[in-house]
Length: 384
Image 1 (cartoon, rainbow, N blue to C red):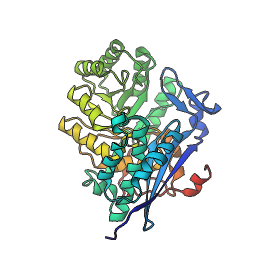
Image 2: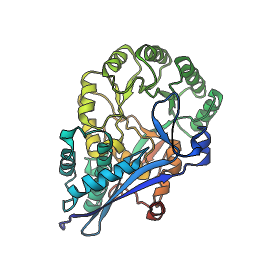
Image 3: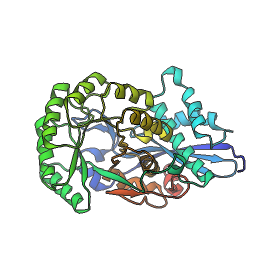
Image 4: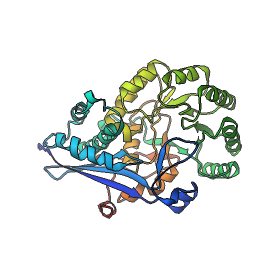
């Protein structure tokens, strides 16, 4: 194989307007800018914001990556352009893991294995895997050691309707399309959450239902909710408590039959190891747009050593991140399902030249070299 070197790193800030139907589900979001969605604490954008990275080599080959940046994607762009790109120039792009180690060392002693630095590294790492796949003529899942499945199962995340009756009707629509697993975005109060759960559960006897509480509860409230979910046979309870409270999650997990799921706030194997050793998590949810593929695979191995499954998280990442998540999910042995966000998928393909095949029940695995997707530069450059 000819020797190639990384010659150029380009970074693109993307902000896409969501469909009107999506905006209509959350009053006030169409006004523009950033806002809160009470009772949730996180900041949200009225646009789908992300960062795309293209790494180009001396022979003209290139790979695409994407880092999770639901707000302030300009921060990730600055980190990539100023800190990461100079460390990549002149390097062999096929040495993906050594390059991950090189990038991780740049700010490690300053405490930046997490946060925006990690998100920026994830974008670069995904691009390197895409590029390495193209150079080797193999799909990313093959480079990761092979796929455990040809179809990656998914679950529908969210029923964005204002009333329980409307949420139940939407769940019935999904069930009519073959969907057998959904996740409810709740945290509205224990009794309100249970009422929503019951309304949705009544739509189909075989529907698996998970609850995402969006870190809204204290331990006593989470115990009440979790015990009621035990009685209902819930699939899992995600993000029940504030993400820094490992001890309370450990107590909750020990008290419940319903698996406790966490991980979207974490970036590396060291964070997950602490939670796994404490038995504070029953289902790990790394997000490839925050971990990159390299670190996500390391997280999966740490989880496997503790006999804990991995269900990759996915929120507002667009087409490149979706493709990376599919390859990742295919290469993890104990992987019950990948998150499928209908609102995100309504815009995710707009940055691609061709849509990603699959959803909402599963994704078909691509055998195209790299990630198997191509970015539509005309859509991206319009915003530059």
